[in-house]
Length: 316
Image 1: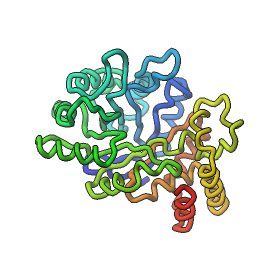
Image 2: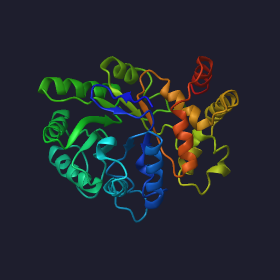
Image 3: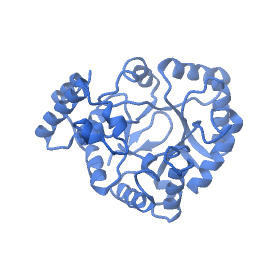
Image 4: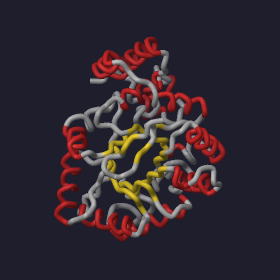
């Protein structure tokens, strides 16, 4: 499998990044271990998580996903240097535990390292913009962690083009490492926040782009065709929001390409992302081996120019 270079970080990632937000939520520990085993057995090697996953689940406290990944790593199922681990800092983890101030980052990384049962994180991301903290302070904290060998590369999530450029300017002025990776929300339906200035800046500056919500909360798998399909499902509420004229046009286009290629809608939606010049790799999750098989197939699916154009128009 051909890995994809992640901007100027010196890291490469598998063409599909596994979304660890499901660990401790819709996938229990045993299921998570089985999925991770199968993902790595298929030749993939990159896992995305965050310290806050999955604090939204009743009874969870945050750090649940990192803990499961850490237990899996500890069992020696894969050599640590054969796995690329991405995690994030900044989301609220309790009273006074959030944001991107230096002292908090230095504390939060230790907690993540402990949960992950490792001595370094391959890629550490700021999860959300923090208007109360200058970029110089955040980047200074990341620089310290890089010097200490606790993180290998840095990036950000959810910044727009203006914010990302401002972070570059701050890094250059202060002589600090810049963000070399971004995680934006981007999929066939949600395109406006990435396409245009942000995508152009990422290409110009050689920024690695790892997309989240790549399957639009499962909507682009084609399993939600009506409001009734979304009822009682873990992600049903989010998926229901896509059931409008635009969403139905996208499903129709996916169905057309599915007939031509024999691929499933989810595979096609991920292959569409992989065909985009600015995108390094999409994040996608699975809670069963059958779902995982579909994700891994997308990495080798090459869409025709006509198929990409059809999908582009449907989600425009």
